[in-house]
Amino acid sequence: MKKRTLFLSGSALLVGLALAAKSIVFTVPLEPELIELSNITPDAPLTYQSGCTQFTTSTPIDRHGQLNVLVWNIYKQQKDDWKAALNSLAISSDLVLLQEASLTPELKQFVVDKSYSAELVRAFDIFDTSAGVLTLAKESAEKVCAHTAIEPWLRLPKSALLSEYPLSDKQTLMVVNIHAINFTLGTEDYKNQIEALSQEVKQHDGPLIIAGDFNSWSNDRLETLQQQVKTLDLKEVLFTPDDRMRFITGLPLDHIFYRGLEVTEAHSMKSNASDHNPLQVSFSLKTQL
Image (cartoon, rainbow, N blue to C red):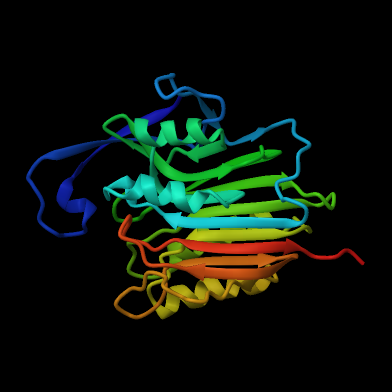
């Protein structure tokens, strides 16, 4: 397992805000790594896989043409109510896409209790606890691939996970769970991350979902994102009600984009269990002509 260790002051993490004068040790993989969490026990040692992993599976992820998806930045489970909220939100969800997931014993226990198929992209470790995007599913993926992009200021990676699932209509659903680069002066690094993921998915001709925390807090960032969405022929999910977290500019940070599916219901709701509000959408498979 290749890795490098970074020593970053607490003030660097908050970009100039003064914190306690002590160093925090981060361990950052030299290349994107996956942590497979299916069939584990909470105290079992973790194994790391670079790049992509394939699985043997034949069970569709949808239920008779219906697919429920939860998207949520879980804020490293720093709020007291995160577990109760996640338990409640996940009950009816076939796919759960989490950003800022911290692989604590409590979160591992949640995965075990729910018997999820689960993969986390190891963006970095803090005090030996891995963090990154985490995708949970009621059925196993056929293939998963880890991606990371370095934050230019903090030098810590943001992560994305590409997963492929069989559908009951014999198509393959590709799902991208993303936490986008945040702290930049311009949009070059942000654009590079989004474009790199677009290149990965553009050859996929089946149904597609791209969702997560895009950190689209400026008009320039939102325009960059929308340009890539257009090239992939994606639509954006519209929420009723729409209680997504918004930056001081009034722009939402979290989005769900899709194609090859139909939206039957979509809403976001206020929650005290994270600094972001969860998004829920119900899809149905399109009738094949």
